[in-house]
Image 1 (cartoon, rainbow, N blue to C red):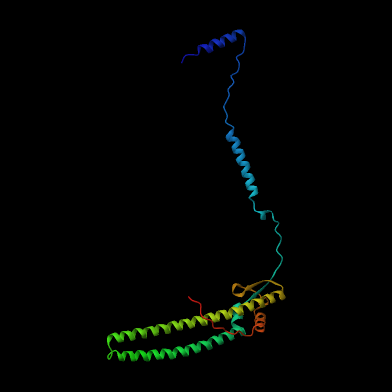
Image 2 (tube, rainbow, N blue to C red):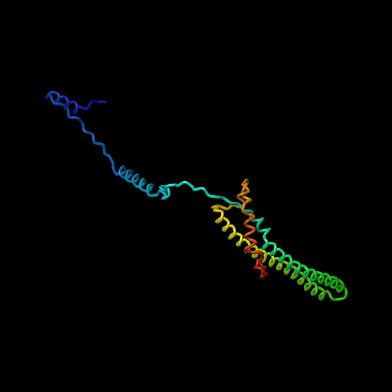
Length: 224
């Protein structure tokens, strides 16, 4: 590769005059716009993070105060209460009435079935099929009535027991206030507990006092 003659001449001429060669100035083009954009994005990110912090992060957490605990066996109290016993007695009495009625109805249908079987040989096939369809419809209607009365009794029992439950809740609230219990737990959710914490007995006594019985109301069953 040949040396640059013009450059060599210029260098020799400057050297001859005793002059120093000026230093070469190199300018590097720099695009500062992306850098400014990056700084701005980071600034906005910091602001959004600071503003997005939940308010409770700065809330001072205080120590919990000791709270007294009580437990209750709700199922046992409900089952043993005077009101619940009166409800079951009324339901069973009404069930016995239904049972007697449907037993008589079933007996009549069985007799009708026997008579229909005897008529098969002495009436026309068309007449027999008509009577058979009518008989099957009466049987189906009897079965629907049985299910309907069962739903009536179940609904009446549930509504009546809800009244007992409401009064029991009021009794438990009164006992909790009296004993200064801040929490009342179900006994079936507790593994081990002191007997002194159990308020089932006083709750039962207060429930029997406030609601000694409940009149069962038989309402039309809700459609399924």
